[in-house]
Amino acid sequence: MQVEYHKYHSPRLHQGFELKVYGHDGRPVVVFPSQDGRFFDFESWGMIEALSRHIGAGAIKVFAIDGRDWESWTDKHKHPHDRAKRADEYDAAILHEAIPFVRQHSRMRHPRDMIFTGCSMGAFHAMNFFLRHPGTADTVIALSGVYQLRTHLGDYMDDRVYFHSPLNYLASLSDHHLLELYRQSRIVLCCGQGRWEEECLDDTRRLSALLAAKGVNHWLDEWGNDVDHDWPWWRKHLPYFLDKLGV
Image (cartoon, rainbow, N blue to C red; front, side):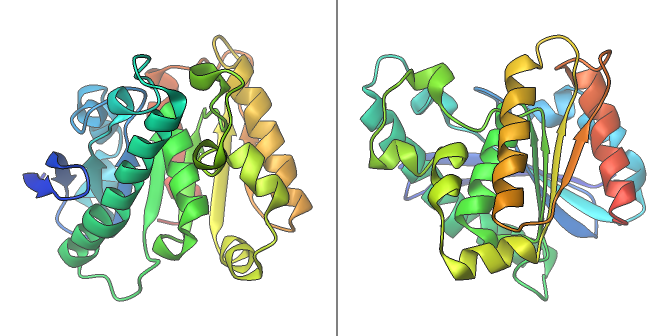
């Protein structure tokens, strides 16, 4: 398997940014790391091995990007407004730096020919980024996500936080262009019903209801009571959904 490591200076984060690329060809799959995670975690937790069939066949090329939770949502030493400001900078770095890198590296012919995914808080990041910037991808696979920020910020809310909380901003969204892009996309929401999935399952169902109310077709897939919030199950989920989507 072809593996590349890249590091560049991010002018929007004002520091180095790292990512790894797995594969020689195929649809680009951008992986957002889980809470406080790094670009190498997807490999470390066995997810690259779980996707080896797809990667080896040239069906996908995986881009595991770095996170910045520890400087934003999980940094308890900062005021919530400042955490959201750092999240805005991370969002801008992905949009204006990482995504163009992915497009160039993959020689993409269509700007939306991309898949976003992530597990746990990575699912939050993947879904949030997709909903904010649906012109960047046509597929999102969100595994066991929570789609608001109460866990980290409590009841605090301001404009910056609001527009990073899908369960808040999607409810009042009326932008026709954004909604049409959602409707032209493949959206997968998956969650187990086992240990540690209670909050994720509730948020997943709420997000599904909001999408349905907006006329956005999507795939809500609730796995069984034995399916826990843990990597062994996510290693099963992602190849399964790629196969079902015909990737």
